[in-house]
Length: 126
Image (tube, rainbow, N blue to C red; front, side, top):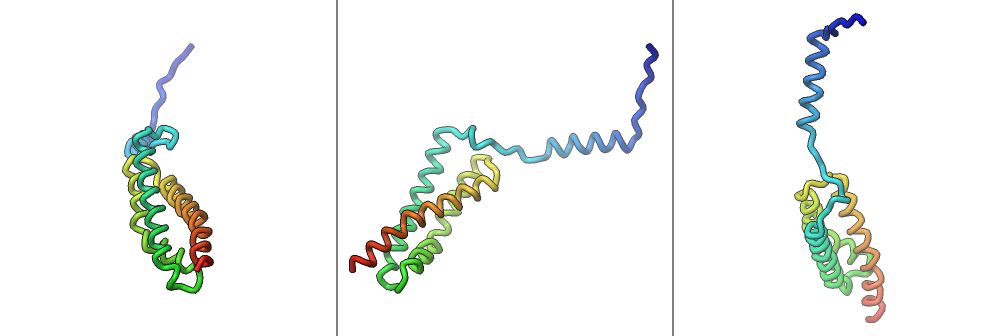
């Protein structure tokens, strides 16, 4: 067999080197399936803090407002920083921003679904 050395142009070599450098610089995010028990506990503590905040803030407003949805909206708004803490905790553990956002939205939706019946009972009981 006759072997000939492969000659790569400078542009090809530069491109290969740049691609390798970019791969090294690309942020490496963790898979949510690799979450530790301690991380899960910390995130769930933040979610519990958020749920408590939304409940307290919404209940404090329900009697003064004509519609329970207004009380829920105001409660959610008052607890924005607490929901941001959920996102920040997830990001701090090295997970992707998209995962943190999805988790926060899911937590917010669950809080609302639990809250509305409670506000309805409170408003209807008076």
